[in-house]
Length: 406
Image (cartoon, rainbow, N blue to C red):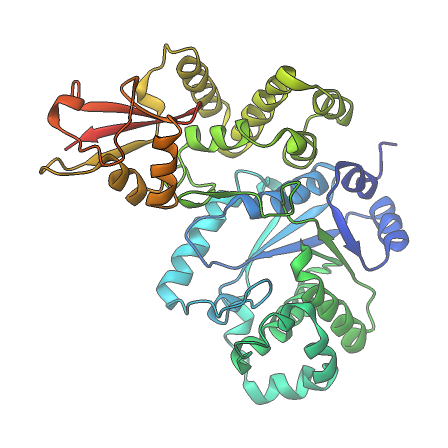
């Protein structure tokens, strides 16, 4: 008998909170557990924050359990207030449908849907049909307002005012769990730790409506050792879609994580055995770079496939040794009409978070154009900078970009 998958999740650092560890462990021992994670279609791609949930899901599937991947065609119409100080932008039905389709494609890279090994559902199928009065009579009495107001996900909204629209989100998510239990005998809901209040609401609703024992489990959010969210780049989120974040940029992100975060990322975001994770995580000084290369390759392989991971690795190593091919670098199109300042072009394209950051880097001799240090903060690009139509910019020691004149 192999290791209980609950212990695997604990050992790899996934588990933040669980409603009843002992009973859930036993459940994993005795049956094929159907469990679900919900993904709200707020964009047309999943990002690094979702990746950790997908990995937890993949570990459970590999241990013989059945994932239910829920895309939020219904909840996406309201927007989850968890972890937000502002209200989410309202999406059109077309946006929601398009984003749900994009999510489905991406999720199937991580989860095997063949032979009923996993189920894909859209909560719009039941939430959009609900009659308001029927819903109130069915589940309204199961929620006490004072308990809802005590939930962490609502507290951050006090300052700006919590709308009644968002106040309903917890009811909708709890209703999903009830519906999935009724339809598929789903016994576990998982999600990021910011979902704890919503998940408990679903566990409670199942108990009160059906007298059913179901469970909630949250995974730790992907954070750096300084507590800040991981997966943010100068250009915004680190997307899992190759069109939005190139496999090369994706590889470079993980290649450049802080030394202190390497072991945690290897445990959470790869399938490497834990002995190997610990060995790599224990490397020191220059040797830790080897562990970062393994991390970057393994994560890129899971998200983009082995072929793209190899290309990204080769491009990164070639550039690092100065033999680089510009083909795999992130490319920025520049319309040379005269007077384009290098720093402005790089800031507009997300290489720098602000012009100030660009100026500081120039003053610290950290920016090169075609292997020449840029010393003038107001340097203006000319056609002479573009050999064969492109120029190579290096930011700091490791980040390369190709500028292409159009």
